Image (cartoon, rainbow, N blue to C red; front, side, top):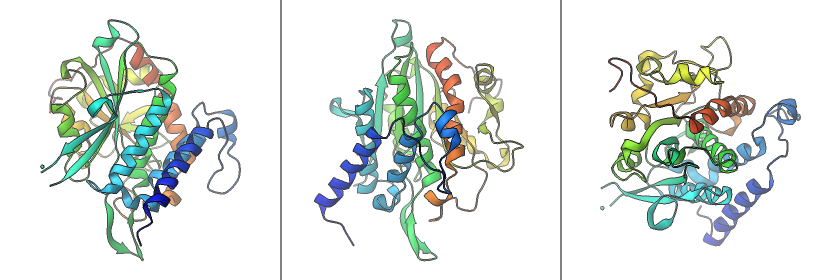
Length: 330
């Protein structure tokens, strides 16, 4: 049953207000016990991450289906968070949302924010941090559930990008940082394809792009709780991130060709060193209604975002530009 419009608008406002007020507070783990890590270890705002996840992956957004009003609602929420953090709009008409016409009938939406570099040289070199905001929407019921919430895929990545935006906005990096949340990744990368043809800065100024995709659960195929980089062997990016505080391993699922299955691939085909950070372990909830909040490992998600603070902090304040290894460029 459709909710009255005024009630849904109030829900969006309430969630945004809650996210703004939660910073610095501890969250509870799935067991209901306070997380020791959230009190003493993490420097990320674990309550903010939880709030993003609880809204983006909620039934209220009906799975954020590509090119649906629910995707637009997600985009509007993300834009409001970027506004709150002080990130500059870089979408259409001095706003955050970039409207993408898929076929003049179908529309999708990207969200784009920017932190201009703090130095003249830095403003000539941009780093993209991205995720995709859509999922599969409402589909065939499985065990009575028809909403494909997309908590891991990819509310987890969106939450990470928002947390990086929140932190970096307070420090104004040396380089320009562009935060992009792509629409309609699930139906063919339409948001990313439009973005590369309508970027906020010339593509020649984009030094590197990192996509965050499915980091809400640990990969059981690894011998420790870690993140992996798609297309590790294609560039020198992974080793350099590790040399500056990262703990990222090579993609253990090479046969799946994940490098070519996220929005990063569309940027990579333009020559940009663009790769995806993930911890997807081929779990059975992939593209199922069961990819919901109940199956998110929040301790892993918080730790994953935390582990990237140092290497991303280095990346946005350095003059490093990764290169493709021989035969690595798609």
